[in-house]
Length: 82
Image (cartoon, rainbow, N blue to C red; front, side, top):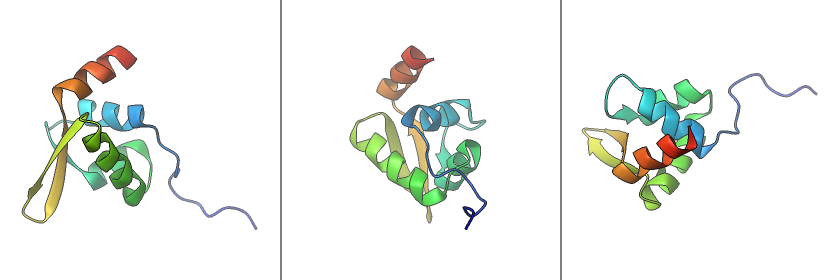
């Protein structure tokens, strides 16, 4: 049976950090990041929570939506990566 069509489940931390850096607004929602990297929202959410624990992104609930943005350490990390 062929695999189901859909977004790639594999995504790197660097892809996620780059997607946040390149977003139009300074803070983006999980679904926005998932769409930018072509991965499922749940996969991206897990990565984002791990990145927050590492101090590379910061997060906040705005109403019922969690938004994410790069921390200073995250900006340095992705600038060094690029």
